[in-house]
Image (cartoon, rainbow, N blue to C red; front, side):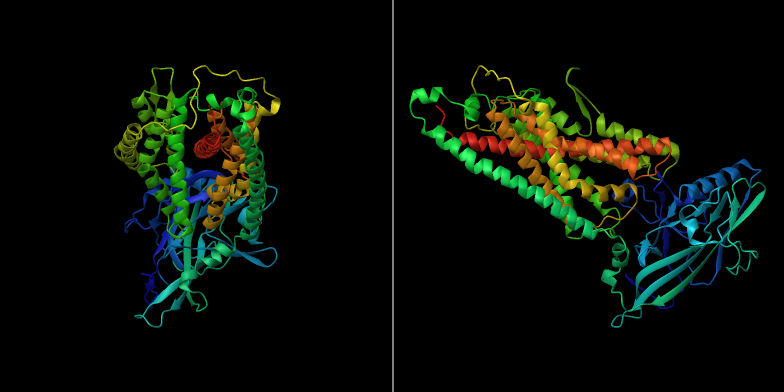
Amino acid sequence: SPLFPYSHSTIELFVNRLDSVESVLPYEYTAFDFCYDESEKRPSENLGQVLFGERIEPSPYKKNMECQSVCPKSYNTEKAEDKAKLEFLKKGMLLNYQHHWIVDNMPVTWCYDVEDNQKFCNPGFPIGCYVTDTGRAKDACVVNADFNDKDTFYIFNHVDITIFYHVVENEAAGARLVAAKLEPKSYKHTNWEKPDCTGPPMSLGNKFSGEIKIPYTYSVKFVEDKTIRWASRWDYILESMPHTNIQWFSIMNSLVIVLFLSGMVAMIMLRTLHKDIARYNQMDSVEDAQEEFGWKLVHGDVFRPPRKGMLLSVFLGSGTQIFIMTFVTLFFACLGFLSPANRGALMTCAVVLWVLLGTPAGYVAARYYKSFGGEKWKTNVLLTAFLCPGWVNEEINNSFEFKVVFADFFVMNLILWGEGSSAAMPFGTLVAILALWFCISVPLTFIGAYFGFKKSGIEHPVRTNQIPRQIPEQSFYTKPLPGIVMGGILPFGCIFIQLFFILNSIWSHQMYYMFGFLFLVFIILLITCSEATILLCYFHLCAEDYHWQWRSFLTSGFTAVYFLVYAIHYFFSKLQISGLASTILYFGYTMIMALIFFLFTGTIGFFACFWFVTKIYSVVKVD
Protein backbone atom coordinates (compact mmCIF):
# COMPACT_ATOMS: atom_id res chain seq x y z
CA SER A 1 0.00 0.00 0.00
CA PRO A 2 1.21 3.52 -0.73
CA LEU A 3 0.08 4.62 2.75
CA PHE A 4 2.42 4.63 5.68
CA PRO A 5 1.64 5.49 9.32
CA TYR A 6 1.94 8.95 10.81
CA SER A 7 4.32 7.87 13.53
CA HIS A 8 7.25 7.83 11.03
CA SER A 9 8.95 5.47 13.46
CA THR A 10 10.52 3.32 10.73
CA ILE A 11 11.08 3.53 7.01
CA GLU A 12 11.64 0.62 4.64
CA LEU A 13 14.82 1.61 2.82
CA PHE A 14 16.28 -0.92 0.40
CA VAL A 15 19.72 -0.85 -1.18
CA ASN A 16 20.49 -2.01 -4.71
CA ARG A 17 23.62 -2.92 -6.66
CA LEU A 18 26.28 -0.26 -7.23
CA ASP A 19 27.31 0.73 -10.72
CA SER A 20 29.67 3.12 -12.45
CA VAL A 21 29.90 5.00 -15.74
CA GLU A 22 33.59 4.11 -15.87
CA SER A 23 33.05 0.36 -15.54
CA VAL A 24 30.47 -1.98 -17.04
CA LEU A 25 30.64 -4.24 -13.97
CA PRO A 26 27.95 -3.66 -11.33
CA TYR A 27 28.59 -5.00 -7.82
CA GLU A 28 26.29 -6.09 -5.03
CA TYR A 29 25.98 -3.76 -2.03
CA THR A 30 27.67 -6.30 0.25
CA ALA A 31 30.78 -6.48 -1.99
CA PHE A 32 31.98 -3.12 -0.63
CA ASP A 33 31.80 -4.01 3.09
CA PHE A 34 29.14 -1.41 3.96
CA CYS A 35 26.79 -1.76 6.92
CA TYR A 36 23.96 -4.14 6.10
CA ASP A 37 21.05 -5.78 7.82
CA GLU A 38 21.41 -9.56 8.11
CA SER A 39 18.21 -10.09 10.09
CA GLU A 40 15.78 -9.31 7.26
CA LYS A 41 14.93 -11.35 4.20
CA ARG A 42 15.76 -10.11 0.71
CA PRO A 43 12.76 -9.12 -1.42
CA SER A 44 12.12 -11.42 -4.38
CA GLU A 45 13.14 -10.17 -7.84
CA ASN A 46 11.60 -10.82 -11.23
CA LEU A 47 13.44 -12.26 -14.23
CA GLY A 48 14.14 -8.84 -15.77
CA GLN A 49 15.76 -7.56 -12.58
CA VAL A 50 18.01 -10.63 -12.32
CA LEU A 51 19.03 -10.29 -15.99
CA PHE A 52 19.87 -6.61 -15.48
CA GLY A 53 21.99 -7.47 -12.45
CA GLU A 54 19.74 -5.79 -9.86
CA ARG A 55 20.26 -7.14 -6.34
CA ILE A 56 17.89 -5.49 -3.87
CA GLU A 57 18.58 -5.99 -0.14
CA PRO A 58 17.17 -4.58 3.13
CA SER A 59 19.23 -1.83 4.78
CA PRO A 60 19.94 -0.84 8.39
CA TYR A 61 18.72 2.74 7.69
CA LYS A 62 15.31 2.58 9.36
CA LYS A 63 14.68 4.96 12.27
CA ASN A 64 13.53 8.55 12.18
CA MET A 65 16.68 9.84 13.92
CA GLU A 66 19.10 12.74 14.00
CA CYS A 67 22.75 11.69 13.49
CA GLN A 68 22.31 8.01 14.31
CA SER A 69 25.27 5.61 14.22
CA VAL A 70 24.80 2.58 11.93
CA CYS A 71 28.03 0.67 12.36
CA PRO A 72 31.73 1.41 12.58
CA LYS A 73 34.09 -0.43 10.23
CA SER A 74 37.76 -0.77 11.07
CA TYR A 75 40.55 -1.90 8.78
CA ASN A 76 44.06 -2.92 9.69
CA THR A 77 46.34 -2.60 6.65
CA GLU A 78 48.69 -5.19 8.15
CA LYS A 79 46.04 -7.89 7.62
CA ALA A 80 45.71 -9.11 4.04
CA GLU A 81 41.90 -9.50 4.23
CA ASP A 82 41.35 -5.98 5.61
CA LYS A 83 43.78 -4.51 3.09
CA ALA A 84 41.92 -6.17 0.20
CA LYS A 85 38.58 -4.76 1.43
CA LEU A 86 40.06 -1.28 1.76
CA GLU A 87 41.65 -1.47 -1.69
CA PHE A 88 38.30 -2.53 -3.20
CA LEU A 89 36.60 0.42 -1.49
CA LYS A 90 39.26 2.80 -2.86
CA LYS A 91 38.84 1.31 -6.35
CA GLY A 92 35.08 1.93 -6.06
CA MET A 93 35.70 5.59 -5.19
CA LEU A 94 38.26 5.98 -7.96
CA LEU A 95 35.83 4.62 -10.56
CA ASN A 96 32.99 6.73 -9.08
CA TYR A 97 30.69 3.82 -8.16
CA GLN A 98 27.18 4.97 -7.24
CA HIS A 99 24.76 3.75 -4.57
CA HIS A 100 21.14 3.18 -5.61
CA TRP A 101 18.69 3.26 -2.73
CA ILE A 102 14.95 2.68 -2.86
CA VAL A 103 12.09 3.82 -0.60
CA ASP A 104 8.53 2.77 -1.47
CA ASN A 105 9.78 1.73 -4.95
CA MET A 106 11.06 5.31 -5.53
CA PRO A 107 14.76 5.95 -6.13
CA VAL A 108 16.30 8.02 -3.35
CA THR A 109 17.75 10.96 -5.28
CA TRP A 110 20.62 13.33 -4.71
CA CYS A 111 19.63 16.74 -6.10
CA TYR A 112 22.25 19.39 -6.70
CA ASP A 113 22.53 22.63 -8.68
CA VAL A 114 24.05 22.64 -12.14
CA GLU A 115 24.59 25.58 -14.52
CA ASP A 116 21.70 27.97 -15.45
CA ASN A 117 20.26 27.62 -11.91
CA GLN A 118 18.80 24.22 -12.78
CA LYS A 119 18.57 21.30 -10.39
CA PHE A 120 19.78 17.89 -11.46
CA CYS A 121 18.35 14.95 -9.54
CA ASN A 122 20.56 11.91 -9.76
CA PRO A 123 18.89 8.58 -8.84
CA GLY A 124 22.15 7.55 -7.18
CA PHE A 125 24.97 9.02 -5.13
CA PRO A 126 28.70 8.20 -5.00
CA ILE A 127 30.54 6.09 -2.40
CA GLY A 128 33.17 8.80 -2.17
CA CYS A 129 35.66 10.62 -4.33
CA TYR A 130 39.35 11.18 -4.94
CA VAL A 131 41.65 14.20 -5.00
CA THR A 132 44.62 13.50 -7.28
CA ASP A 133 48.27 13.98 -6.30
CA THR A 134 48.25 17.22 -8.31
CA GLY A 135 45.38 18.51 -6.13
CA ARG A 136 42.61 18.14 -8.76
CA ALA A 137 39.25 17.24 -7.24
CA LYS A 138 37.65 14.38 -9.22
CA ASP A 139 33.89 13.72 -9.60
CA ALA A 140 31.95 14.53 -6.39
CA CYS A 141 34.98 16.02 -4.59
CA VAL A 142 34.12 19.35 -6.22
CA VAL A 143 31.08 19.75 -3.91
CA ASN A 144 33.13 20.56 -0.82
CA ALA A 145 36.08 22.97 -0.51
CA ASP A 146 37.35 20.97 2.50
CA PHE A 147 38.18 18.05 0.19
CA ASN A 148 41.61 19.44 -0.58
CA ASP A 149 44.33 17.01 0.62
CA LYS A 150 46.39 15.67 -2.28
CA ASP A 151 46.33 11.95 -3.20
CA THR A 152 43.47 11.37 -0.76
CA PHE A 153 40.13 9.56 -0.84
CA TYR A 154 37.09 11.07 0.88
CA ILE A 155 34.33 8.64 1.79
CA PHE A 156 30.68 9.70 2.11
CA ASN A 157 29.99 7.96 5.42
CA HIS A 158 26.97 10.04 6.44
CA VAL A 159 23.65 10.61 4.65
CA ASP A 160 20.93 13.16 5.40
CA ILE A 161 17.71 11.54 4.16
CA THR A 162 14.59 13.68 3.69
CA ILE A 163 11.28 11.92 3.12
CA PHE A 164 8.53 14.09 1.59
CA TYR A 165 4.95 12.99 2.18
CA HIS A 166 1.43 14.30 2.05
CA VAL A 167 -1.42 13.39 4.33
CA VAL A 168 -4.38 11.62 2.78
CA GLU A 169 -7.54 13.30 4.12
CA ASN A 170 -10.30 10.85 3.33
CA GLU A 171 -8.56 7.58 4.18
CA ALA A 172 -7.52 5.99 7.45
CA ALA A 173 -4.76 7.80 9.30
CA GLY A 174 -1.86 7.60 6.89
CA ALA A 175 0.30 9.52 4.50
CA ARG A 176 1.71 9.00 1.02
CA LEU A 177 5.38 9.18 0.24
CA VAL A 178 5.92 11.53 -2.73
CA ALA A 179 9.71 11.97 -2.82
CA ALA A 180 12.86 10.76 -1.11
CA LYS A 181 16.03 12.85 -1.31
CA LEU A 182 19.38 12.60 0.37
CA GLU A 183 22.62 14.47 0.69
CA PRO A 184 25.85 12.49 1.10
CA LYS A 185 28.33 13.97 3.57
CA SER A 186 31.69 13.08 5.04
CA TYR A 187 32.50 13.37 8.79
CA LYS A 188 35.44 12.10 10.80
CA HIS A 189 33.29 11.58 14.00
CA THR A 190 35.63 11.87 16.96
CA ASN A 191 33.18 10.32 19.41
CA TRP A 192 32.02 6.87 18.22
CA GLU A 193 29.21 6.22 20.64
CA LYS A 194 27.64 9.68 20.42
CA PRO A 195 28.36 11.12 16.98
CA ASP A 196 27.45 14.79 16.46
CA CYS A 197 27.78 14.94 12.64
CA THR A 198 30.10 17.93 12.59
CA GLY A 199 33.79 18.47 12.02
CA PRO A 200 36.32 17.72 9.30
CA PRO A 201 35.65 15.21 6.46
CA MET A 202 36.57 11.52 6.66
CA SER A 203 39.76 11.34 4.64
CA LEU A 204 41.71 8.26 3.65
CA GLY A 205 45.29 8.76 2.43
CA ASN A 206 46.13 6.69 -0.63
CA LYS A 207 49.44 5.51 0.86
CA PHE A 208 48.04 5.25 4.42
CA SER A 209 49.14 2.27 6.52
CA GLY A 210 48.12 1.23 10.03
CA GLU A 211 44.58 1.01 11.41
CA ILE A 212 41.70 3.13 10.16
CA LYS A 213 38.12 3.37 11.41
CA ILE A 214 35.22 4.45 9.23
CA PRO A 215 32.04 5.20 11.22
CA TYR A 216 28.79 5.20 9.20
CA THR A 217 25.93 7.48 10.35
CA TYR A 218 22.65 8.85 9.03
CA SER A 219 19.82 11.29 9.74
CA VAL A 220 16.20 10.98 8.62
CA LYS A 221 13.64 13.76 8.65
CA PHE A 222 10.07 13.89 7.35
CA VAL A 223 8.71 16.93 5.52
CA GLU A 224 5.09 17.41 4.50
CA ASP A 225 4.62 18.52 0.89
CA LYS A 226 1.07 19.08 -0.35
CA THR A 227 2.06 20.22 -3.83
CA ILE A 228 3.17 16.85 -5.28
CA ARG A 229 0.43 14.40 -6.25
CA TRP A 230 1.21 10.73 -5.64
CA ALA A 231 0.56 9.84 -9.30
CA SER A 232 3.18 12.34 -10.52
CA ARG A 233 5.84 11.70 -7.91
CA TRP A 234 8.37 10.47 -10.51
CA ASP A 235 8.18 13.73 -12.47
CA TYR A 236 10.88 15.61 -10.58
CA ILE A 237 13.44 12.92 -11.48
CA LEU A 238 12.43 12.69 -15.13
CA GLU A 239 12.22 16.48 -15.59
CA SER A 240 15.84 16.91 -14.56
CA MET A 241 16.87 14.91 -17.63
CA PRO A 242 16.45 17.47 -20.41
CA HIS A 243 15.90 15.18 -23.38
CA THR A 244 12.47 16.03 -24.71
CA ASN A 245 13.38 18.97 -26.95
CA ILE A 246 16.21 16.96 -28.57
CA GLN A 247 13.74 14.10 -29.05
CA TRP A 248 11.30 16.33 -30.94
CA PHE A 249 14.16 17.52 -33.12
CA SER A 250 15.13 13.91 -33.86
CA ILE A 251 11.53 12.94 -34.69
CA MET A 252 11.22 15.91 -37.06
CA ASN A 253 14.54 14.98 -38.66
CA SER A 254 13.34 11.38 -39.14
CA LEU A 255 9.97 12.49 -40.52
CA VAL A 256 11.69 14.67 -43.13
CA ILE A 257 13.69 11.63 -44.29
CA VAL A 258 10.52 9.53 -44.42
CA LEU A 259 8.61 12.19 -46.39
CA PHE A 260 11.50 12.54 -48.84
CA LEU A 261 11.67 8.76 -49.31
CA SER A 262 7.90 8.37 -49.55
CA GLY A 263 7.89 11.03 -52.25
CA MET A 264 10.56 9.15 -54.19
CA VAL A 265 8.81 5.81 -53.83
CA ALA A 266 5.42 7.29 -54.72
CA MET A 267 6.93 8.91 -57.82
CA ILE A 268 8.45 5.62 -58.94
CA MET A 269 5.34 3.62 -58.09
CA LEU A 270 2.79 5.91 -59.64
CA ARG A 271 4.57 7.50 -62.57
CA THR A 272 7.28 5.15 -63.77
CA LEU A 273 5.62 1.87 -62.81
CA HIS A 274 2.26 3.02 -64.10
CA LYS A 275 3.82 3.92 -67.44
CA ASP A 276 5.77 0.65 -67.53
CA ILE A 277 2.69 -1.47 -66.83
CA ALA A 278 0.52 0.42 -69.33
CA ARG A 279 3.23 0.07 -72.01
CA TYR A 280 3.84 -3.63 -71.34
CA ASN A 281 0.13 -4.43 -71.38
CA GLN A 282 -0.44 -2.61 -74.70
CA MET A 283 2.06 -4.78 -76.54
CA ASP A 284 -0.22 -7.01 -78.54
CA SER A 285 1.90 -8.11 -81.44
CA VAL A 286 4.60 -10.73 -81.23
CA GLU A 287 7.12 -8.23 -82.66
CA ASP A 288 6.51 -5.90 -79.76
CA ALA A 289 6.90 -8.71 -77.29
CA GLN A 290 10.30 -9.45 -78.80
CA GLU A 291 11.41 -6.00 -77.70
CA GLU A 292 10.67 -6.41 -74.01
CA PHE A 293 12.95 -4.41 -71.77
CA GLY A 294 13.36 -3.32 -68.15
CA TRP A 295 11.96 -5.31 -65.30
CA LYS A 296 9.43 -7.23 -67.41
CA LEU A 297 12.33 -9.05 -69.08
CA VAL A 298 13.18 -10.96 -65.92
CA HIS A 299 9.64 -12.17 -65.16
CA GLY A 300 10.69 -15.77 -65.76
CA ASP A 301 13.49 -15.60 -63.18
CA VAL A 302 12.30 -13.21 -60.52
CA PHE A 303 10.85 -15.97 -58.32
CA ARG A 304 13.76 -18.35 -58.82
CA PRO A 305 14.72 -19.80 -55.36
CA PRO A 306 17.74 -17.99 -53.89
CA ARG A 307 21.03 -19.65 -53.08
CA LYS A 308 21.28 -20.75 -49.43
CA GLY A 309 17.48 -20.58 -49.18
CA MET A 310 17.61 -22.62 -45.95
CA LEU A 311 19.60 -19.92 -44.17
CA LEU A 312 17.46 -17.09 -45.55
CA SER A 313 14.22 -18.77 -44.44
CA VAL A 314 15.65 -19.33 -40.94
CA PHE A 315 16.76 -15.68 -40.75
CA LEU A 316 13.23 -14.63 -41.75
CA GLY A 317 11.70 -16.82 -39.03
CA SER A 318 13.97 -15.39 -36.33
CA GLY A 319 13.46 -11.85 -37.66
CA THR A 320 9.67 -12.24 -37.48
CA GLN A 321 9.98 -13.39 -33.88
CA ILE A 322 12.10 -10.33 -32.99
CA PHE A 323 9.79 -7.98 -34.90
CA ILE A 324 6.60 -9.10 -33.12
CA MET A 325 8.38 -9.14 -29.75
CA THR A 326 9.66 -5.57 -30.22
CA PHE A 327 6.31 -4.28 -31.45
CA VAL A 328 4.30 -5.76 -28.56
CA THR A 329 6.87 -4.76 -25.91
CA LEU A 330 6.98 -1.15 -27.16
CA PHE A 331 3.19 -1.02 -27.41
CA PHE A 332 2.83 -2.10 -23.76
CA ALA A 333 5.60 0.32 -22.75
CA CYS A 334 3.68 3.15 -24.48
CA LEU A 335 0.59 2.33 -22.44
CA GLY A 336 2.71 2.77 -19.30
CA PHE A 337 2.83 -0.87 -18.16
CA LEU A 338 6.64 -1.05 -18.40
CA SER A 339 7.66 2.29 -16.84
CA PRO A 340 10.82 2.59 -14.69
CA ALA A 341 8.56 2.24 -11.62
CA ASN A 342 7.90 -1.41 -12.55
CA ARG A 343 11.43 -2.62 -12.02
CA GLY A 344 12.59 -5.22 -14.53
CA ALA A 345 9.18 -5.34 -16.26
CA LEU A 346 10.54 -4.37 -19.68
CA MET A 347 13.14 -7.15 -19.76
CA THR A 348 10.73 -9.74 -18.31
CA CYS A 349 8.10 -8.86 -20.92
CA ALA A 350 10.65 -9.12 -23.77
CA VAL A 351 12.01 -12.51 -22.61
CA VAL A 352 8.54 -14.02 -22.07
CA LEU A 353 7.34 -12.78 -25.47
CA TRP A 354 10.48 -14.14 -27.14
CA VAL A 355 9.81 -17.57 -25.67
CA LEU A 356 6.11 -17.54 -26.61
CA LEU A 357 6.70 -16.35 -30.19
CA GLY A 358 8.36 -19.58 -31.33
CA THR A 359 5.24 -20.47 -33.33
CA PRO A 360 5.30 -17.53 -35.81
CA ALA A 361 9.07 -18.03 -36.22
CA GLY A 362 8.63 -21.71 -37.11
CA TYR A 363 5.67 -20.96 -39.38
CA VAL A 364 7.37 -18.18 -41.40
CA ALA A 365 10.63 -20.14 -41.76
CA ALA A 366 8.79 -23.29 -42.92
CA ARG A 367 6.50 -21.39 -45.30
CA TYR A 368 9.34 -19.59 -47.09
CA TYR A 369 11.63 -22.62 -47.08
CA LYS A 370 8.88 -24.59 -48.80
CA SER A 371 8.32 -21.83 -51.38
CA PHE A 372 12.10 -21.79 -52.03
CA GLY A 373 11.72 -25.45 -52.97
CA GLY A 374 13.47 -26.83 -49.90
CA GLU A 375 12.81 -30.37 -48.70
CA LYS A 376 15.01 -30.83 -45.61
CA TRP A 377 12.24 -29.66 -43.31
CA LYS A 378 13.66 -31.26 -40.13
CA THR A 379 16.93 -29.33 -40.49
CA ASN A 380 14.93 -26.17 -41.17
CA VAL A 381 12.90 -26.52 -37.96
CA LEU A 382 15.95 -27.28 -35.84
CA LEU A 383 17.83 -24.31 -37.25
CA THR A 384 14.88 -21.98 -36.64
CA ALA A 385 14.66 -23.14 -33.04
CA PHE A 386 18.39 -22.78 -32.42
CA LEU A 387 19.75 -20.28 -34.92
CA CYS A 388 19.41 -16.88 -33.32
CA PRO A 389 20.23 -18.56 -30.05
CA GLY A 390 22.65 -20.90 -31.89
CA TRP A 391 24.15 -20.80 -35.41
CA VAL A 392 24.40 -22.83 -38.61
CA ASN A 393 27.28 -24.69 -40.19
CA GLU A 394 25.96 -26.16 -43.41
CA GLU A 395 29.21 -27.85 -44.43
CA ILE A 396 29.34 -30.25 -41.48
CA ASN A 397 26.34 -32.40 -42.33
CA ASN A 398 23.96 -29.51 -41.56
CA SER A 399 24.83 -29.80 -37.89
CA PHE A 400 23.71 -26.87 -35.76
CA GLU A 401 25.80 -25.55 -32.95
CA PHE A 402 24.92 -23.38 -30.02
CA LYS A 403 27.02 -20.52 -31.14
CA VAL A 404 26.38 -16.87 -31.55
CA VAL A 405 24.08 -15.43 -28.92
CA PHE A 406 24.18 -18.17 -26.34
CA ALA A 407 27.93 -18.71 -26.65
CA ASP A 408 28.53 -14.94 -26.52
CA PHE A 409 26.22 -14.60 -23.53
CA PHE A 410 27.86 -17.53 -21.76
CA VAL A 411 31.36 -16.07 -22.25
CA MET A 412 30.13 -12.69 -20.94
CA ASN A 413 28.67 -14.46 -17.91
CA LEU A 414 31.94 -16.28 -17.22
CA ILE A 415 33.82 -12.95 -17.26
CA LEU A 416 31.24 -11.43 -14.88
CA TRP A 417 31.51 -14.43 -12.56
CA GLY A 418 35.29 -14.13 -12.60
CA GLU A 419 35.06 -10.44 -11.68
CA GLY A 420 32.53 -11.16 -8.90
CA SER A 421 29.97 -8.80 -10.48
CA SER A 422 26.28 -8.77 -9.57
CA ALA A 423 25.43 -8.79 -13.30
CA ALA A 424 26.61 -12.42 -13.52
CA MET A 425 23.49 -14.46 -13.96
CA PRO A 426 23.01 -16.92 -11.10
CA PHE A 427 23.29 -20.56 -12.15
CA GLY A 428 19.64 -21.17 -11.25
CA THR A 429 18.46 -18.37 -13.58
CA LEU A 430 20.65 -19.71 -16.39
CA VAL A 431 19.03 -23.14 -15.98
CA ALA A 432 15.55 -21.53 -15.83
CA ILE A 433 16.14 -19.65 -19.11
CA LEU A 434 17.44 -22.81 -20.81
CA ALA A 435 14.35 -24.65 -19.53
CA LEU A 436 12.06 -21.91 -20.93
CA TRP A 437 13.84 -22.16 -24.25
CA PHE A 438 13.90 -25.97 -24.55
CA CYS A 439 10.53 -26.74 -22.94
CA ILE A 440 8.41 -23.90 -24.35
CA SER A 441 10.11 -22.06 -27.22
CA VAL A 442 11.42 -25.11 -29.12
CA PRO A 443 8.12 -27.09 -29.02
CA LEU A 444 6.23 -23.94 -30.12
CA THR A 445 8.66 -23.52 -33.04
CA PHE A 446 7.97 -27.13 -34.06
CA ILE A 447 4.20 -26.51 -33.93
CA GLY A 448 4.57 -23.39 -36.10
CA ALA A 449 6.77 -25.25 -38.59
CA TYR A 450 4.28 -28.14 -38.77
CA PHE A 451 1.49 -25.79 -39.87
CA GLY A 452 3.86 -23.94 -42.19
CA PHE A 453 4.86 -27.12 -44.02
CA LYS A 454 1.28 -28.39 -44.14
CA LYS A 455 0.16 -25.36 -46.14
CA SER A 456 0.93 -25.31 -49.84
CA GLY A 457 3.88 -23.15 -50.97
CA ILE A 458 3.36 -19.45 -51.69
CA GLU A 459 1.71 -18.96 -55.11
CA HIS A 460 3.75 -16.73 -57.43
CA PRO A 461 2.02 -14.58 -60.08
CA VAL A 462 4.45 -15.66 -62.86
CA ARG A 463 6.00 -18.99 -63.83
CA THR A 464 9.75 -19.52 -63.44
CA ASN A 465 11.72 -20.49 -66.56
CA GLN A 466 13.75 -23.67 -66.47
CA ILE A 467 16.95 -22.08 -67.75
CA PRO A 468 18.24 -19.08 -65.78
CA ARG A 469 18.68 -15.89 -67.76
CA GLN A 470 22.06 -14.29 -68.28
CA ILE A 471 22.48 -11.15 -66.13
CA PRO A 472 24.02 -8.31 -68.18
CA GLU A 473 27.11 -6.41 -67.02
CA GLN A 474 26.02 -4.10 -64.19
CA SER A 475 27.05 -0.49 -63.69
CA PHE A 476 28.74 0.44 -60.39
CA TYR A 477 25.50 1.65 -58.78
CA THR A 478 23.51 -1.49 -59.51
CA LYS A 479 26.17 -3.92 -58.29
CA PRO A 480 25.07 -5.68 -55.08
CA LEU A 481 27.60 -4.18 -52.65
CA PRO A 482 27.14 -0.43 -53.33
CA GLY A 483 23.35 -0.92 -53.20
CA ILE A 484 23.54 -2.76 -49.88
CA VAL A 485 25.86 -0.12 -48.37
CA MET A 486 23.61 2.74 -49.53
CA GLY A 487 20.46 1.01 -48.31
CA GLY A 488 21.38 1.16 -44.61
CA ILE A 489 22.20 4.89 -44.50
CA LEU A 490 18.65 6.30 -44.47
CA PRO A 491 17.14 3.95 -41.84
CA PHE A 492 20.16 4.63 -39.63
CA GLY A 493 19.72 8.38 -40.13
CA CYS A 494 16.22 8.05 -38.68
CA ILE A 495 17.27 6.28 -35.50
CA PHE A 496 20.72 7.47 -34.51
CA ILE A 497 19.60 10.23 -32.07
CA GLN A 498 17.25 7.79 -30.35
CA LEU A 499 20.10 5.29 -30.31
CA PHE A 500 22.21 7.76 -28.32
CA PHE A 501 19.60 7.85 -25.52
CA ILE A 502 19.20 4.07 -25.51
CA LEU A 503 22.96 3.54 -25.25
CA ASN A 504 23.05 6.19 -22.49
CA SER A 505 20.39 4.32 -20.53
CA ILE A 506 22.26 1.01 -20.87
CA TRP A 507 25.85 2.13 -20.33
CA SER A 508 25.61 5.49 -18.53
CA HIS A 509 22.84 4.26 -16.20
CA GLN A 510 20.40 7.02 -17.11
CA MET A 511 16.69 6.30 -16.90
CA TYR A 512 14.90 5.68 -20.17
CA TYR A 513 11.23 6.51 -20.05
CA MET A 514 10.26 8.05 -23.42
CA PHE A 515 8.63 4.99 -24.94
CA GLY A 516 6.15 7.09 -26.94
CA PHE A 517 9.07 8.59 -28.86
CA LEU A 518 10.65 5.18 -29.23
CA PHE A 519 7.44 3.66 -30.64
CA LEU A 520 7.19 6.51 -33.15
CA VAL A 521 10.82 5.99 -34.19
CA PHE A 522 10.12 2.24 -34.49
CA ILE A 523 7.29 2.94 -36.97
CA ILE A 524 9.50 5.42 -38.87
CA LEU A 525 12.30 2.80 -39.04
CA LEU A 526 9.82 0.28 -40.41
CA ILE A 527 8.67 2.63 -43.18
CA THR A 528 12.20 3.78 -44.06
CA CYS A 529 13.62 0.24 -44.26
CA SER A 530 10.72 -0.84 -46.48
CA GLU A 531 10.89 2.17 -48.79
CA ALA A 532 14.69 2.21 -49.19
CA THR A 533 14.67 -1.52 -50.03
CA ILE A 534 11.79 -1.23 -52.51
CA LEU A 535 13.50 1.70 -54.23
CA LEU A 536 16.79 -0.17 -54.69
CA CYS A 537 14.97 -3.37 -55.63
CA TYR A 538 13.20 -1.54 -58.47
CA PHE A 539 16.50 -0.14 -59.81
CA HIS A 540 18.08 -3.60 -59.77
CA LEU A 541 15.14 -5.23 -61.56
CA CYS A 542 15.27 -2.51 -64.22
CA ALA A 543 18.95 -3.37 -64.68
CA GLU A 544 17.78 -6.99 -65.29
CA ASP A 545 19.33 -8.36 -62.08
CA TYR A 546 16.76 -10.71 -60.57
CA HIS A 547 18.68 -11.82 -57.44
CA TRP A 548 16.55 -9.69 -55.13
CA GLN A 549 15.92 -12.03 -52.17
CA TRP A 550 19.24 -11.93 -50.32
CA ARG A 551 19.92 -8.40 -51.50
CA SER A 552 16.67 -7.04 -50.06
CA PHE A 553 17.46 -8.74 -46.73
CA LEU A 554 21.02 -7.40 -46.62
CA THR A 555 20.10 -3.89 -47.86
CA SER A 556 18.00 -3.00 -44.83
CA GLY A 557 19.98 -5.40 -42.60
CA PHE A 558 23.08 -3.30 -43.31
CA THR A 559 21.62 -0.72 -40.91
CA ALA A 560 22.98 -3.00 -38.18
CA VAL A 561 26.53 -2.46 -39.48
CA TYR A 562 26.06 1.31 -39.09
CA PHE A 563 24.66 0.62 -35.63
CA LEU A 564 27.83 -1.32 -34.79
CA VAL A 565 30.08 1.48 -36.10
CA TYR A 566 28.08 4.02 -34.05
CA ALA A 567 28.40 1.86 -30.92
CA ILE A 568 32.20 1.73 -31.40
CA HIS A 569 32.27 5.53 -31.86
CA TYR A 570 30.10 5.93 -28.74
CA PHE A 571 32.49 3.76 -26.75
CA PHE A 572 35.54 5.86 -27.62
CA SER A 573 33.92 9.31 -27.58
CA LYS A 574 31.33 9.19 -24.78
CA LEU A 575 32.29 6.47 -22.32
CA GLN A 576 35.18 6.54 -19.89
CA ILE A 577 35.18 2.76 -19.50
CA SER A 578 38.49 1.37 -18.31
CA GLY A 579 39.64 -2.21 -17.79
CA LEU A 580 39.83 -5.17 -20.14
CA ALA A 581 36.84 -7.05 -18.67
CA SER A 582 34.54 -4.01 -19.07
CA THR A 583 35.70 -3.47 -22.66
CA ILE A 584 35.13 -7.12 -23.59
CA LEU A 585 31.67 -7.01 -22.00
CA TYR A 586 30.72 -3.80 -23.82
CA PHE A 587 31.64 -5.22 -27.23
CA GLY A 588 30.23 -8.67 -26.40
CA TYR A 589 26.79 -7.25 -25.59
CA THR A 590 26.98 -4.82 -28.51
CA MET A 591 27.56 -7.75 -30.90
CA ILE A 592 24.41 -9.49 -29.58
CA MET A 593 22.39 -6.27 -30.06
CA ALA A 594 23.78 -5.78 -33.59
CA LEU A 595 22.91 -9.37 -34.58
CA ILE A 596 19.34 -9.04 -33.29
CA PHE A 597 19.01 -5.67 -35.07
CA PHE A 598 20.37 -7.21 -38.30
CA LEU A 599 17.75 -10.00 -38.31
CA PHE A 600 15.00 -7.52 -37.42
CA THR A 601 15.77 -4.88 -40.11
CA GLY A 602 16.65 -7.51 -42.74
CA THR A 603 13.28 -9.21 -42.29
CA ILE A 604 11.43 -5.90 -42.74
CA GLY A 605 13.35 -5.27 -45.98
CA PHE A 606 12.68 -8.74 -47.36
CA PHE A 607 8.93 -8.68 -46.67
CA ALA A 608 8.57 -5.19 -48.19
CA CYS A 609 10.43 -6.29 -51.30
CA PHE A 610 8.53 -9.58 -51.55
CA TRP A 611 5.24 -7.68 -51.44
CA PHE A 612 6.47 -5.19 -54.06
CA VAL A 613 7.74 -7.83 -56.50
CA THR A 614 4.58 -9.94 -56.16
CA LYS A 615 2.44 -6.84 -56.71
CA ILE A 616 4.16 -5.53 -59.86
CA TYR A 617 4.39 -8.91 -61.60
CA SER A 618 0.75 -9.71 -60.85
CA VAL A 619 -0.50 -6.69 -62.84
CA VAL A 620 1.64 -7.32 -65.94
CA LYS A 621 0.27 -9.60 -68.65
CA VAL A 622 2.80 -12.33 -69.35
CA ASP A 623 2.34 -14.94 -72.07
